[in-house]
Each structure stands twice: as structure tokens, then as C-alpha cells.
Length: 331
Image 1 (cartoon, rainbow, N blue to C red):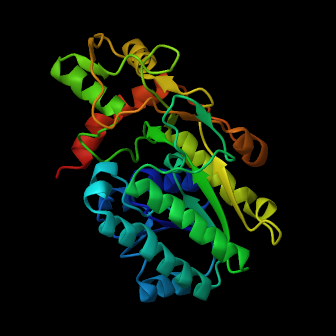
Image 2 (spheres, one colour):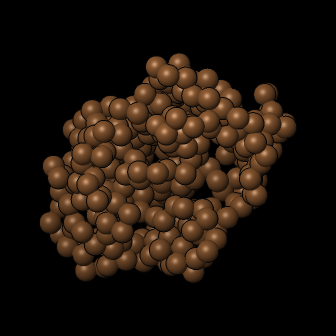
């Protein structure tokens, strides 16, 4: 059995490919390498190119007729960048995804697992969200994910495709076998900033201490990337039992169910490292919000999925990945 993974040389896609390999599923990678890394494709079937390239997609299916499903992880994902360049984001994430679906339909493939985002919810008051929560994306990036979900649902309702959208917030960690991980040397999320502060011997600023959360600091949902990969594999295996003619599209949240505040993340970080990280309280940055986290009852019921790896394990594997990343990604 083969699965086409669009964006399979990126952080999420490459880790999904690793999980597929471990389960006896052959990943076929399609990636433009705009953000992905060639190093993540070395032992895998790889096609370099764009998801909107119909001739290339036709060639992939011609050469791999056993492809039974597609995992769509190809997207631009940097929120500030999306604010500066909304046209580029709508073109890359929406227009090219629409073209991609046309190519998949022509190839006769009607199973699509879409790597979406829990940022389609408002999730800015410290509370939890589930699949029935209202959609209020707060950035052009998040809106591209919401638009794609609705676009795919409309296409599915017309009987042209079946689509499962997986929504999640903040992946952390790396493939436990260190085959793949986050390719950025200076990630912008809180854990990345903590690691940077720890390496430089500086205090980590806790920006905002008066939010409506259990300790006053912002809350986020950190899920180990290997758990997310396992959810994608479970979705592949259960796809036909979940998506039917009467329900051809569905969204499923992947989250911890409780979230992690900034102070809790700092405490977990200090349980992992030998030298404690110092912190300093600071004012919120422009645009900062309390945040939120994701309930995953539907994932537990339909996919048989719950997060298995702890926050500490995510932090530890993030730290373990750094020397591997630096040796692998020399530029």
C-alpha cells in the first residue's frame, strides 16, 4: 500500500512519512522544497515539484498506481509572513490546493487527509475548543486553512472527493529515531525561544501574566509530532469506515485536552535540563492573546487516538534533535 504525502519533506509531512514506513505503508513524497528539506527524502520515493503541476501528479500516479490515499501537508505556515503577504499565502495554500484536488480526481483518487490547523477557531481566551466550536480564524494563514476546509467540504458534498481534516495547534519534538524534526534553527514558538534562551544563558521572558488561565500566563496546546504522525496513520487505516457517501467530509481535532501554560512549559523544561532556565515576567507583546487548547474526544472515539508522549518527552526530543539537525542541515 502506498500513500502520496504532499509536503512530505517538511516537519509534519516527513514525520508522517516516517510513521508510515514503520507501519509498512510506502510513502511517496511530493515536495517543492520551498520550505521542505531534501535531507528528509533520502530513503524515500521522492518527486520534487509543485502540487499544482498536473503533469507531475499524473506521472506520480502512473508510476505508483497502488497509491490509495493522499496526505496533504503542503502549505506555507508562518503567521506574520501571511499578514505581510496574503496574496502569496492564498495562492500557495488555497489556489494550488484547488488545482491539486483536480489532479487527484483525474487520477481517480478520492481519499484525502488534510493537515489543517486548530487556528481556524478563535481560541484566544484560554478556553478549550472542539469540532463544534465556531470558526473565527485570526490571520491570513488561518483563513487559508478554513477556506480550504470549506472548499474541500463543498467538493466532497458534490460526490467528487472524501476529505478528513485534522486540526491541531503546536507540534513539538522529533521522530524518536531522529530521522526527521523541525528544520528551523530559530523557531518562533515558545519552546524554541526557551531553548534559545537556555543555550545563550539568558532569562526567558514570560510575556503576559494576567490572562484568564489557571496561572495567569498564556496557554497553548503542545502535541508531540510523533503522536500527530500516529493520528495520520490511524486516519489512513480507518478512512473508509469514517468517510462515506452520506458523510463525505469531517474534521477531527488532535490535542491534549488540557493545554499547557507558559509557566507549566517552563517547569517541564526545567525537569528535563540539567541547568534550570531562568524566567522574567514581561508585558504582553502586540497581538498576544491568552490562547487556547483542543479537546480530542472525537479523535479518541473515531481514530482510537490519544496523545501518548508527554510534554517532557516532547521537550527532550526537541533538545536531542538539535545536534542531529545541525549536522544534517548544514545550510
